[in-house]
Length: 76
Image (cartoon, rainbow, N blue to C red; front, side, top):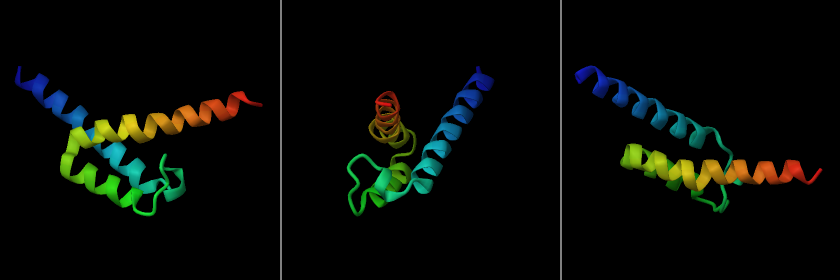
């Protein structure tokens, strides 16, 4: 049981790090709302809310960005 918890914890940390690195590497124009402080706000959310912030970021930024790219590619 302990090994399962360590595995789940490792997956959670890796997911959080991927979302944090995506946020920090993303240019400010590539956020859905493209506000002046959007990148700063999401960075703070990811740092303070950890896994919950990563889930929010994934659904509110990452997936919307992927949907926009898919719709742009299908228009050609």
